[in-house]
Length: 102
Image 1 (tube, one colour):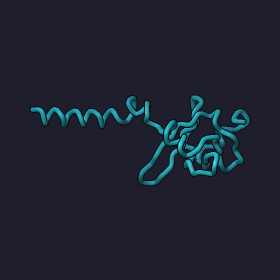
Image 2 (cartoon, one colour):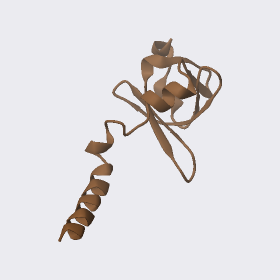
Image 3 (tube, one colour):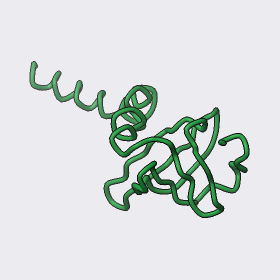
Image 4 (tube, helix red, strand yellow):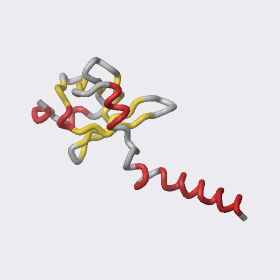
């Protein structure tokens, strides 16, 4: 069903799981993935394959996955953070370690 979805229209729309779980808001769609973010202070981001979209009703994108699958398989950063934001954190940890060793 995901082939019938106008993905440009889904930006800033709600996303939910197969049992109605709140996945957050669609932030971006590119390269076959949907970037979803939830939370205000403690933000969580997820990259969900477009083919897992079950339907879009103009307000909500529903995916064919559960909350457990979302958390275990699609959390942004499981493999992507090494190429983006966590590099700075790793360098900071390494710098601290070097100071301790000296």
